[in-house]
Image 1 (spheres, rainbow, N blue to C red):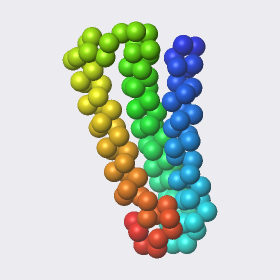
Image 2: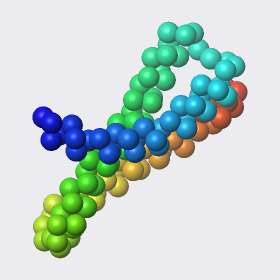
Image 3: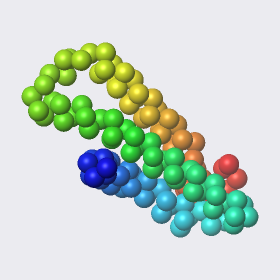
Image 4: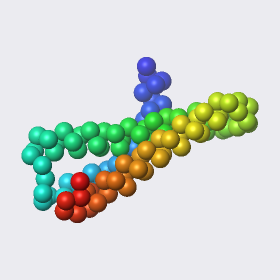
Length: 114
């Protein structure tokens, strides 16, 4: 369990650094036209939770590849596993960027952007 938690420190830090600017934008610029507080808080918790978990998953999937390369193994030693990993990493990156592009006007405080 300690190994798992220590291996997720860097992905959690990177994920936090990626999401934090958008959270600050949402909390400072988007003060008008909000939904009732309970619904708004739940929506934002889910949105920022997903925006935080996707880069965490991306980094957690990327780090084993980087570690094996740094250990001297070739990238093409397991081409099937590499293809699946790259496909999943591309899917995670696409979903994260699609959510971000969809929600960016809301983060910037554009009225009626939802």
